[in-house]
Length: 399
Image 1 (tube, rainbow, N blue to C red):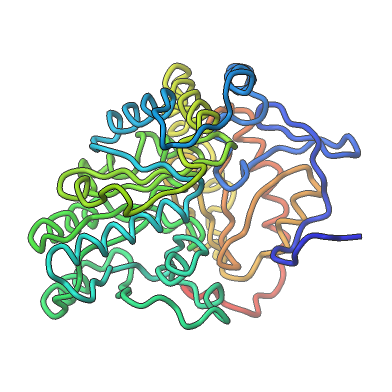
Image 2 (cartoon, rainbow, N blue to C red; image 1 turned 90 degrees about the horizontal axis):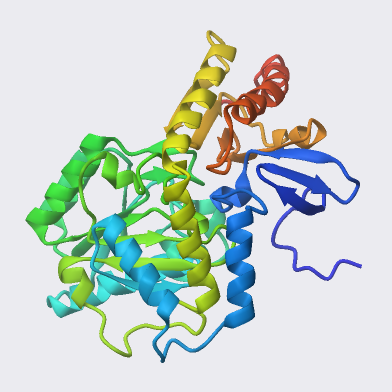
């Protein structure tokens, strides 16, 4: 009997335990995890220091209402504000909730400035979540279909096209913010250029718009620095995080600075579970372990290992459109659909993901070793070669 609502097509494997970047299923078979729960398991599985923190916290306190002061919450806010160059934080339970808070903050900011119908610039191929507002901000018609009427107030432009943003700035007086993922995850590992991020920051300054970055998937050291915007040496006004922040324990946060940090007042926004002691203790442990074990540096180095190995393996193969990404957020775009690779990879003991039908997404835990990074490519390469050896009937959108 299957009592689960039919919202996802599940692969035929049931995992029972993990250690490091390895998982075991209920048949005792071992798998190399190149997916880390969609960039969630920052520290891999069963990290001893992380596990100990969770056990100790559960034995003390799991939840109290955020009507009261919570020590772990205050420490986590201070840490994130410090490493991110922000001022204050609102904690919630997921990435879409963090983005929902950012959208509400931007709208309230607009109304406070006298804009009756505030609008937010968002990107093509973006993914910000599945609540109605974040789904409306998302640039994926397949995900939106059937949930109309969508929330209005979003203006969509191509990623890395600063001219389109300047056009909107000249013609649309309702815009109050720009929201984007510095690296689009679900959209195909599309990387914002350093120049684009800097130009957006300049336009937002000129227009008094909020510069809002969704680093739900790409943040927390995955690309080397704590956050992708640090590659460009800019600061957002609003920053959203989740996924890897809790190392597997659900948590989200919306951080703000400057005028954005003063928008919300008591009663404007809230959540029951946000900032509970267990989730905050988990996130604090993740940040401390990433720092002390130099996992940000490891992410940058191991990302190069994987990208270089893929480039060598597929050099001259016209079926590979592009290998791209930063750190341990890697996409390999093929000239054809390859969704079947997820199931085929299980047969060789590998977990990967395919997004936008033709982009192989590799987002392993930050603890991955050189040998394990190379093993991902060793196991994946024959499967990709086999797909590319077949006649190509359907070209990708870019191909």
